[in-house]
Length: 91
Image: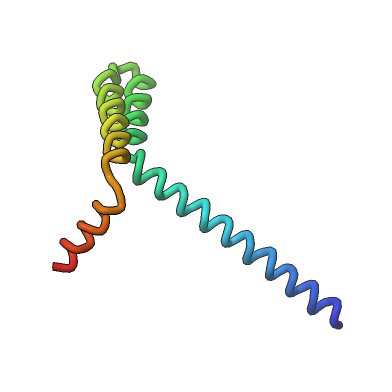
């Protein structure tokens, strides 16, 4: 009887660890999409147009611009910017 109870507890522990890992992957995917969302969206639109036989040059150029803007925003922001925006929201 004790063996079955211990086996059930270990099974529950494994499921809990699996759920935590899946949640961490989901959070990382959401963060990546939020950071690169515009670029991914534009690249997908360009691929769709190219597969349909149309010119996707405009979307490709927009994706490159979005990627450069995202890289620039990441370099320009610091913790002070987040603290200042928090103060603005509080007022």
